[in-house]
Image (cartoon, rainbow, N blue to C red):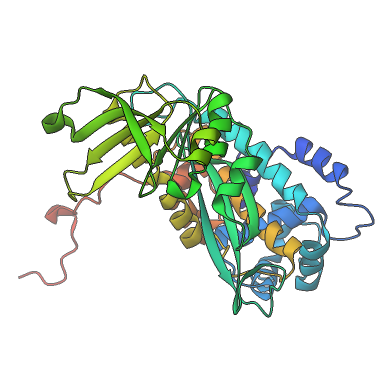
Length: 390
């Protein structure tokens, strides 16, 4: 891998360029292109993500400051801000969506044996959304409120490795529960979500697909107890573990089978939480632990907003915004692949921080991204130079 290449060039070697070429051909991405091919466009967008560039001019100036290294980075000509802006506006955003999906499939295979924190062999997904506020006068295609625009990132996160397996970008008005209609449920997998996704007709569709859900009950919930299982309140914090049937006419029609209702008191906060699930075999404590693991998707949103460039956009059109978001997700997953392939102990945060200040350095990638555990040893007095012989 390393033959005098920059760190950026070494990272880009993990991109499956042959498969990417087929994606570009599928959408005619390079049709009529003279400069800045789709390959170079992704390199420029990935460079912007890794080095925290804030604008098109910022990308142009920082790259032009290193003209002797551009060819080795994969650029065949200088990157002009107007050319990059036109490419983001005109080239189909699905090119980058398909590239991200390709990288996600590869990353999930690498992280399939990652510990989950719960004694469970099934795949566990966390579903949630995050809103990014925009200016209504500039992003009129993404209405949210009368005075504000916004987009939503609806994300299904595989909790083994925190890899996003499904992302849908919508305007701010789309309700979270509608995303359940877009998912293809995996039999035997667990889907953990908050009570904003409680829609009994959609949950029953998930149940019929052979998948399991864990969510919180809305208050009040009209249901009657059918059966109660014994629980150990003192040791587990579980107040009750019940089978219930819904009472409401429409609710009972939409979900005509038993639901499992678990009431749990958090020993730290003292707050009582009510969980709903269609799984009857998992211990009640494990169901509570599964819902607690949903917090990983909140941390994922917080992480990408802090460390990826998805709050300041390089273009105002829907295509440009989706292009930037998908390139950011592809870059995130690419670094996760690099971390796993090279078996690095460093966190994703550490890898990104190192790359942000050293993409032009010519050193081996594993050496650059592996934090040095050796502590600086103080020099002995015998090796010190003596200025005054007193």
